Length: 151
Length: 284
Image (cartoon, rainbow over all chains, first blue to last red; front, side, top):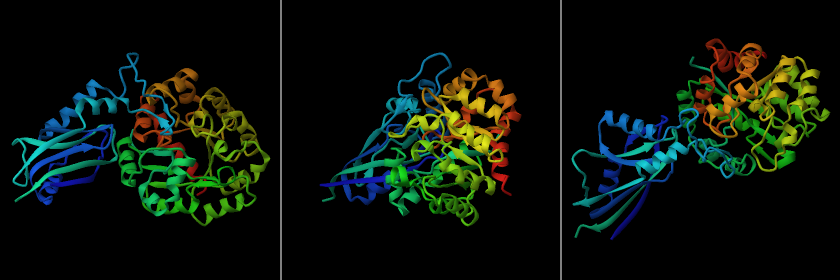
């Protein structure tokens, strides 16, 4: 049995951004010597996410835009507000990212794939994205690989 | 309107500097009280790009007497600025120390820093305490601005009494050629700070204030309800500066909020760029 935990850094450069991390997941699995098993991918942060979807530029725009409609950073004036927009003494700053936490909850923070014959098993159009909701920031993604070596 | 200067940033989370000087991590956590993750400098520069900001003033705080700590030394600020030509370094000195004027003179003339940061609440002195007057005399002679923390202070142990705008009146009156900037609109005492700026043309205000709700709604309250926007637009247009207080708030968020308030394009140009350039250029 092999169990490996990797931490990769992803640097976002926009407010919201979908960053394709599929090649990194594939590379780590292929280097792991795991033949049959599972790879688990999880963001370390509560204002970012992990999303699996088709790897096309139009969806990379549509998905953050839709989440922004569901949880707008600044709600329409005079409508509602967020309790999280208050002084967070443990951070020494105001919590101005309630909407980004909500997007992370809605969009999810993890995914997993089977491993077969030493490779990640994905649908033909599936890609693994790190999704930034509160960028730009340097972020950490955990990738855990678990499984059996080839006989 | 694009381009401009963020007159108020604290580089306490810059990872490259924390890796070189581990004590900066302690200063960020224990003295400055900022709990966010350390980030590569390129993240701050990317945020400036998103905000349409060209350059940022980076501020140290010398709290040797009050906290037995510095949040960046002047030399570390110089080193940080060597990593990017988009950073404008300020100095800090400890007004409690007799050597403060000489330290300031060295920081400006030898190290090439561009202004002075003082944080009365963290450094524990009243701005109108005569103890600090030699520092003001030195700054006035050097032709550099002083950016004072004013108003409420986040840090535990920092008392609000040191930040009331009226404690800056003697400084403004006694040093008429010294440009001083009261940070954070001196919130909650915005009316008092505005009164001071109306009376003394050498008093400026930076808008890096966010104490509840969100940047848009907070600044709308402070700059349209506590004081009408027309006062800033018509009377104080040459005395208001853009500042974010990064990393306590994102540069992009404060820039968007200021641009949403309803200022004329001409006034935004003054707030974001021209006023800062004038203060920084007085020396040359």
